[in-house]
Image (tube, rainbow over all chains, first blue to last red):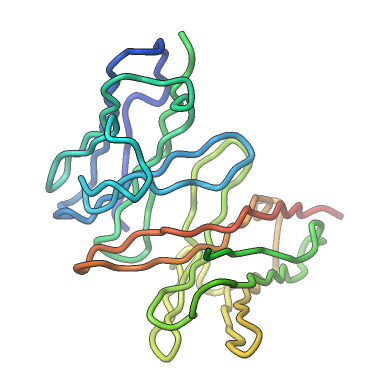
Length: 107
Length: 120
């Protein structure tokens, strides 16, 4: 299985801050990397697929980058609705695997 | 609007079989992978498996001996059976649609999730 790890696990930030979350794969996954946002009691929501393609309706302050084994999700100016947990996921192979999550909290 | 809705018992006894159904509305079931994912309370997401109508079924090797997935296209439903459950199978279970675009795969639609507790 391909192992996915995220850092940090917790991130304290304020509205307007620029935040970045890193995701690393245990082997190269090319560009088969997606990002999801999850709020308490809700299902995950797709934000980005294929490293950097924004899902319809997702604001442009959210972006993704990277390739191979290291990837980054960036929120350029954190908004109140962005406080949530973020997961990366690889679709290079099965079983599909997710990072452990990064919780973005209010500072 | 594509919607997925999980249904099934919220409480299952140890050693018994967990059975869940996902009902799909607003979209054809063809040309997509239909998937089950679970999330223990306060923890991360675990992919259970997927199937493609008329094609392959893939299960997570960690669960493969206990998992069966099936589909009833006439009812627009697909199902998960997980046998010999233990407390470790207690989680929120999600059904999801995996689609692909230029060979990039992603989960674009999710059910709201259903909480299943394994307890005597």
